[in-house]
Image (cartoon, rainbow, N blue to C red; front, side):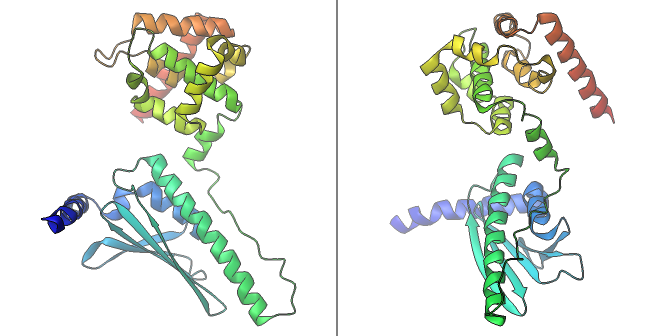
Length: 296
């Protein structure tokens, strides 16, 4: 019985793997994970090769015939991903393995973060391997020309989104999230209505802040302090945070704007120097742009 209790969760996870991979390939399940590793380690030229008879495993190598000295083997099982990297430098081989959990149903941002962490570890190990090999072959040579390269695509859409918030300080980002919480709960809604909102979770991820810190700032310094932090921000910075504000005024049951939440939003905007008319014009422009892109 005890053995069954130990094995049962593992068998359940294996069944989930089989169901996932029956509908999609590993690359289709985690596209941002693999594209981030391709960009970080293979200058965007990483090509996925599935292993025959095992949908849980793939290899990645560069399509550049002059860069065939590195391979990454991936094995997905029970929601975990194992990455094994092989790299040759002057015929001296580096091999190491890295494991990560929480891959099942990983969001775009989680995939990117997990892959980026692996890329940074791999770059460091490759750098150290190169230094070791050069010193082995040429012990009298001063090794100062080997560097860690960062060939990430400058047009990475997620990086571009995160960069669009550079105009806000960390304090202002935390204040904006806390203000959003006050708006979302203006009708008496519980905190969970705010923290379970996908748009809120996405905005927290874009800002690279934690909800606990935002909440602590509100509790420690109060509402007026948050308003003071945001007072005088340029109206040109509002378009990038309008989707976040517009999401927190929606009633999750009706799908419509809640009057109390909407009025609270206008009150806060007025307090920081943004008129209702200015905000509504920005919201309309954003809506029209979204419709235009979605129709293409």
